[in-house]
Length: 292
Image 1 (cartoon, rainbow, N blue to C red):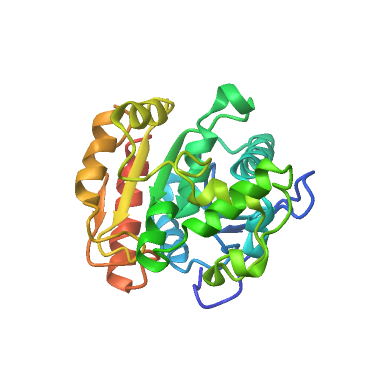
Image 2: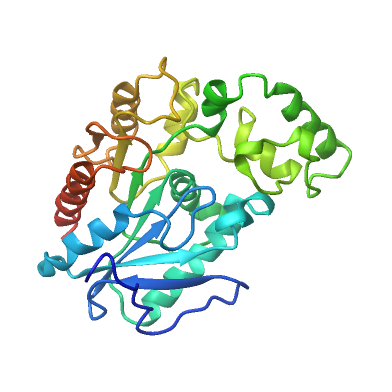
């Protein structure tokens, strides 16, 4: 597979019953197993380059029998502002069901950034009755709430306004521009703003100030192996947050968190350096070997 060339479409074209959801495949289309990549806010298929490095490495490791799928969810690109983790779970589950129907055996969800929140939400099988998968990879699991401390420390009035709209029954309405966040560069509903940036919001899985019981409750939902990879120099993580300690905390919270978990050396949120991408791809292959 040439990473600079066109992306091959899914061998068996897939469009979910959910409007706007589709998937694309990279690698050997005859593979028995599937790695489903889920990007972060404003991501969609082909926007996170390092997954191509992972796909190339898997092509060179045919004994693992994995190809890589990228999926366009309702929340992809600018759709995140009017969507939710619950919507993402529904879309991802539809794809998982489809992949099972065409004979894929192992299915691993690979989340980047907010895709990690999607993976965490997906483990709540009791809530969603969604299709089970065989493992998870979380890369750059960061707190959106804490990232605002770095970029927009005076965000509280914006959150207060969103909460006011929700209390008035206007949670699905979009925030006025002056109460939104310019760096999001997309319309965002009061509900989604609260989910992302309020303590205890639906997306608040990775904040460093979550108490031990809350962390245990989240991570105890895993019943399949999970690889957790923080980016050592993640620009969205405040300097006061010790990512190495948090990674160890997650490993202690669940026996399903792989001991291969840790920090990707010398790289930021989206793993831009080629050396770091190769390190990440190698660690993914190591993890997948433990599942066979």
